[in-house]
Length: 108
Image (cartoon, rainbow, N blue to C red; front, side, top):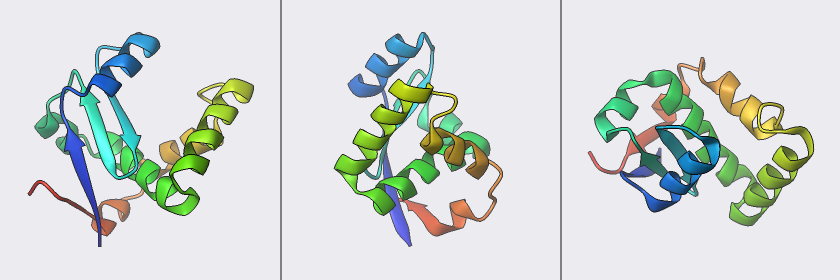
């Protein structure tokens, strides 16, 4: 079982929201999902969004922290956010009903 945490009203997520011109954002660093503009309960009830972010946690585990960050930034700079391979993989995971079963929220 893999554990994750959630940080609401995260400064990091607020910066991402500003950059993305979005009112609400979830961004993952390691095994922590940083939220801005969305309450934890609403995020956890949105299964597609939760699955997406859990896939990013799996990517961190697979690649390691530094390699994930480097790969993510390199891909988004060269092919854009939408075509970034890590984002494509996370979007596919939005329909993976089993991914949630591999995780447990550490705040419960």
